[in-house]
Length: 221
Image (cartoon, rainbow, N blue to C red):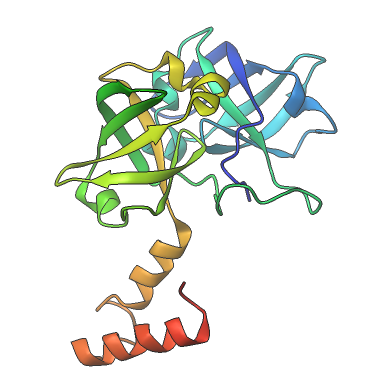
């Protein structure tokens, strides 16, 4: 599990990815501390398993499903990537629950500055947008962010200078793809209320009553 709080950015020193699978090597420093083969590191939000380590880099394999679902295949040598180690028991939970399992990709459609902040508008599929709510959480390239706007075919986030400086967002431009992970809580609620669920035999009133019950019990806040 991750939090979406980026520990550092690294750079791609080697990659060999095709439509099927591959591997990559990333130059890093902080995330290598106390890390060993078999540990998990999120690379642009994608949970990867460390297969080998040097003093200043780590290597990870990438399977076919990851290539299909993420933007890793668009990476090139020397590209900057966001890095986060899996949350330790002693760690602070500063972002939101992030699994490192990408739901799909989005495309940056607009970048504009507003005083000290920068707005990023990102288009994506209806499936991903259906689980995004204003002021809710979204993980973009591994970064835990708050949704500022939800539009018909896109959503927007407003980035503070600290995030701009300490992640790879400063390298992004209009047309670039980013990895997206929806809030896991939203996915569970959608599943529980889905007509395809084995336990779904409810009317709209039943569903409203269940939501109110969850609110009273503190399941939803």
